[in-house]
Structure formats: structure tokens, C-alpha cells
Image (cartoon, rainbow, N blue to C red; front, side, top):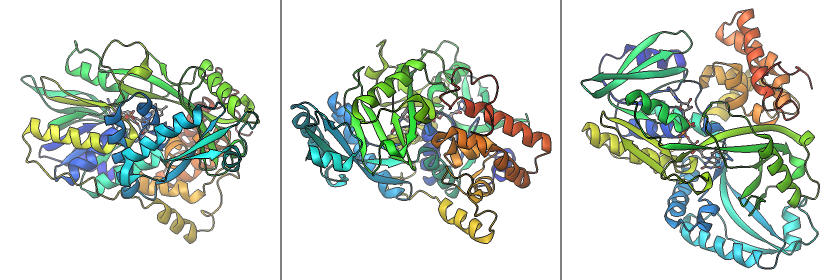
Length: 518
Ligand SMILES: Cc1cc2nc3c(=O)[nH]c(=O)nc-3n(C[C@H](O)[C@H](O)[C@H](O)COP(=O)(O)OP(=O)(O)OC[C@H]3O[C@@H](n4cnc5c(N)ncnc54)[C@H](O)[C@@H]3O)c2cc1C
């Protein structure tokens, strides 16, 4: 994928696009794959980087949602389990099955959770990833050697899926391009083109150059996650909000807190939620919270009480309680929960997606979750076809493999140049070849794009990512022709951003950049 080429396609087209999509997260990219593979002409614009928003900040589970089972929402669980199966089949290189254990310290917990999870298996049917079963205390300790042993009675083992969210977003972008779509990052939608009262396209700005362009399309999709209301307001000033954002925070710990390949599920936190501790890329992700927030931001920050809540609940289950000093990274994301009523507590709001068509023809889709992105895309593209009277195309995404050539391409770069085969940092699982690939093949434009979403360095170890920022900027400068001043500015901006992911400097992080060495 090459940004200059994609941008030229956007600027150079004289005919109408069938579908213009605003938003390059799971929802927009999924819709681009669906629409392009049905044969429509499609352009997608993303104001920042692909998956910069919520779609790189998930717990990274491909799941039916054990919690929704408890809430009795069988239809939602069934849909997600069906999509879980499809995603694992269509992107086997980016997803895998993962065992989860619920440690039980009270007599009723094992039969209670065991029965619920057997129902989960039954709903998954032949798409099940492994059989739920009850474990003895010894078997729980075998799988989770660091779990608190005193009072442990039994456990429940079940299976779900895991994935890399930002990498999956990139695979969707690549697949969309392979299917004929044009997808461009760092292009912002600033408003709509209208004729009479109908939307006939979008006015966009290339964020890198400030150039403006008109993109004319038969139908426009608003897939901007927690930002959908801001775009809807540009269509009509009197819209009632569709989304109520809810913040979720994760802490990333060293693997020693949860060695092995099994994830831990804490079924009821002190505030009545589900909490996961999940092995991921050589670390453990612990989260998440569910805090209603009034503001939407591309860089939400963890609240002190969310950090405390996670540490307190992890300490209830782990023999060695993690402390702030053990946290390698803290990241926050905003769930775009569909606003159905005036319910104050966001955990009670819907995880389902909603589609709205405005009088002027703006089609907005929001809600849902990563796991169900494909179904969301199918639904919204069908709606767009109907609204714009496009010739309906066959939806093929249920069986369409997702394109991802990253591992092979990075290995080839490293094999061809010993300098690129060198590790970026002893605490990070990446090589210098990863940086070069990110720029050449994956449309990375900034140090942040490389360290946060092409690699996941920022999420795995914020300080280590700060330590390598200068090296990364130097490699990128060689590829992108940056001046020394541009290179220095990139490092400065990155260190300032990454400071917000360091726990110790939290609070003071928005000011001075953190030190470059740990
Ligand atoms: C803490 C947390 C944990 C989660 N865990 C899971 C999980 O384990 N499994 C799961 O299935 N789901 C999970 N989810 C849900 C899932 O991450 C989201 O449902 C999904 O990522 C939403 O994607 P989206 O594309 O709708 O929004 P986003 O990813 O936010 O994408 C919207 C994009 O629109 C862009 N945009 C906004 N305005 C404009 C504009 N004017 N012009 C151009 N672009 C614009 C933004 O920059 C952004 O990139 C989790 C969510 C959170 C918050």
C-alpha cells in the first residue's frame, strides 16, 4: 500500500464514487472491504492513521461476550460467536484460539460459571474453539501458576479467540485495496457537499499538505466511531446524539505475572464487572474498565480510579500483586456505545450496532464491536445499496480471506540487509526491518504510526518505545526524505505522546517529554 498512489486515485477520479466512507477503524475499513468486494467503487478517508481511534485499543478478544450471556442477550452472543468463527477462518495469521480459566474460590462459582459456559459452547456449535470443563484446584494452578492459591477450590476452563487489533485493521485496509478500493490516511472530512438538501459527497483536507478536495459520491457512510455525532452535526445541527462514549483502560504487565498460554477471567470485580488478564505478545494485558465520559478524544487518558480498580482486582487473584512500578504501559479507548435511552450507566447500554439514515442521505453506523465488524459492514453496505439504488452486489466477506503479507515481507527485508535484521530494542519483539516495511508497504507516516500500530511497541513497553524513537525516526527519514528538523519534531511529538502511556509520569505527562533512556 502506498499513500501517494492512493491519494492520487482520490484526487484524480472524475466519475462519481459509488460509496465514500469516513473513518478508518474496524467499522469503516470493514465496510470498504465489503463494498469493494461487491464491485462498487469505494473511497475511504481517515483523518489520522488507520485504527488510531478505538480500533487499536481493544482487549484484543474475538469473542461472543461471556458478559452478554449473563445479561441474557443470546442473539448478540450468537451473532458474535458466528462472526468469531468467520474471523478465525478468514485471518488465521492474525487470530487464534485461547484458553481462559475462571478461578473459583466459593463453592457455587464452578457450577454456576461452568453451566453458563457450556451454554456458550452449545451456542457456538460446530464453531466452538474447545470444550468447556471444570478444573480441580491443581489443574487451575498448572494453567495459572501465579494465581492466588489460598482458598482456591476449582476452576472453569473455556475457549475464546484473540487477535491483534491494529494489525487486523491494516489487513482490512490492504484487502480493501486489493479489492479495488482507495483508502487514504491523514485525510480529514470537514463537511458535506450538498445539492438541494441531498448529500452528494464530502469536502476533505489532506492533513499533511492542507490541500482541500471535493470527493463526490452516490452515498456517504459515517463510520467515525465515537465521533459520529460530530459528523452528523455537520449534516444537521439539531441531531440527537447516537453515541454515549464509555472509556475502557488496560494495564500492560510483564509476562511473569501470568506465564503460560492461558488467560484469566475475573468474573466479578469490586464494581461488578468482568476483568481479563490476557497473555499478548510476550506481555499480559489486564483490563478493562467501563467509565462513562462526556468528552471524545483520539488520545483518551486513563483516570486514576480506573488504574486503581484494575490493580486492586488483579491483586485479589494474583499471588504477587502488581504495583504501579510493574506497569509497562497504560492505554485507554472509548467504546462507541449506541445510545438507546437515557440509561445513565454505560455498562447497560447496547453493544449492538445501529444504522441511521438522515433525511439528506448520510448513513451513520456505530456501536457493535471488533468481533462483529464484518456483519456490521454487510448490514451497512446493503443499506447503502438500497438507499442509493446501487446495483446490489453479492456479499462475499463471510469467506473472503484477509490479505496480510507483513511477516513474509519483513522477513525478506531482514534477510536482504543485516542492518535491518538487528533488533530494535532488547525488550521489544521487533527488528529494524519492521520500521522500513511499515513505511514502504503499510502507509506509516509518523514515528507514532510505526511504534503504536504497525508494531505495538507503545502498548507493550512505553519506555522502550521512547528509547527507540530516535532510531525509528532516523530510519523513516531515510525512507521519507525528512529534514533534520522534521526528524527531531517527530521524536519530540512521539515522546510527548508516549509519556501519557507511562504510569509513573501520568498526570505530569502532558507537559515535558519523558527522558529518552530508562
Ligand atoms: C477498552 C475497549 C476494549 C474493547 N475490547 C474489545 C474486544 O476485546 N473485542 C471486541 O470485539 N471489541 C472490543 N472493543 C470494541 C471495539 O474496539 C470497537 O467497537 C471498534 O474498534 C470500533 O471501531 P470503529 O471503526 O467504529 O471506531 P474507531 O476505531 O474509533 O474508528 C473511527 C475512526 O474515524 C476517524 N474519524 C473521525 N472523524 C473523522 C473525520 N472527520 N474525517 C476522517 N476520519 C475521521 C477517527 O480518527 C477514527 O480512526 C473494545 C473497545 C474498548 C474501548
